[in-house]
Length: 354
Ligand code: SAM
Ligand code: SF4
Image 1 (cartoon, rainbow, N blue to C red):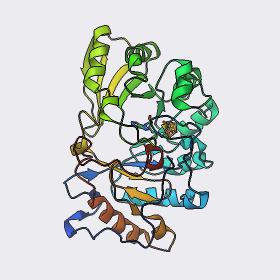
Image 2 (image 1 turned 90 degrees about the vertical axis):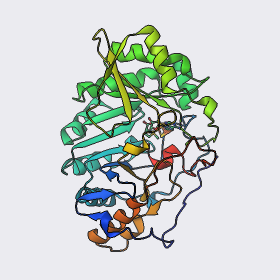
Image 3 (image 1 turned 135 degrees about the vertical axis):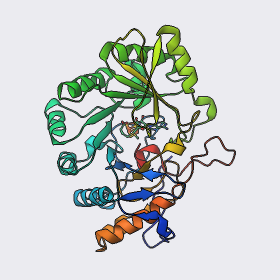
């Protein structure tokens, strides 16, 4: 199904003004008492894969002029920093397809952020580029890889990139200075749930941080249903049948993953990201920005707010910051996937920025 965009056009109603108590200098607050300090910045909606749980072959991309420019991304991140944002993840679509990625990392790397990370499908990387990103301030890279079987890789990603290409990219990342790269694996019943233990073995063999992600209703095919979801508990039980694990405390209270190491002190880590079976909305400190400059307070928001028109119409940084405060205030309490009235958002993961 083609992604239908946009949801809001410039000129539609802005969010209602947030109350005075939302305007706390250097802090971005929502109406549920959460302080937002983390941003997911999507820099493109384009992708060279068509992962079955994300995009469909016929999905259309936005015209380039709709996407924010390099200067607009950089300006927006500087404003967010003033609002108290401390960490940023660059995503997409496939962020490595963004032609000005190197310059963007160079610019953002100069800002006073605690952490800059990126999520990629690992298809488009080389050592020289990785080294440059690392020296420019990119601190962490997460690779997406949902199978260790080459034939299945083609079926899942509908691309020519091989498992070995992506594993090779994780090794290059380590060589470039990124410590223990992360691997995200979306596990779907009947598709790759028979590989959970193999992925745990991969974490050990390659000293990787493998994160198992529950399948979320953000697929373009709209095929998601609860029966496709393999709960984190089930994945964990399967791994523990093979390997003894010990719980690994996460220093970040906002982390979305529950983590384990191997009891025999083998290298590697295991993480479970369980938004469906164990929602972590209460601790969520994130705001999402789409490639064309829409602020999405939640992955599952039905409301999103246009900031691009302000960036393009001469608004001051102060005015943009005030608008972002209003937008953040609207963040919903939770995603409600398990509620009977849950409605999948119009946008897919690739059009939001995962
Ligand atoms: N293209 C890059 C990649 O795949 O790593 C970055 C963008 S992708 C949308 C970000 C993450 O979202 C990936 O790890 C992907 O596996 C995950 N993702 C996409 N659709 C999902 C879904 N329906 N449920 C759970 N995770 C999903
Ligand atoms: Fe592309 Fe990433 Fe979506 Fe796969 S998950 S289709 S690589 S954006």
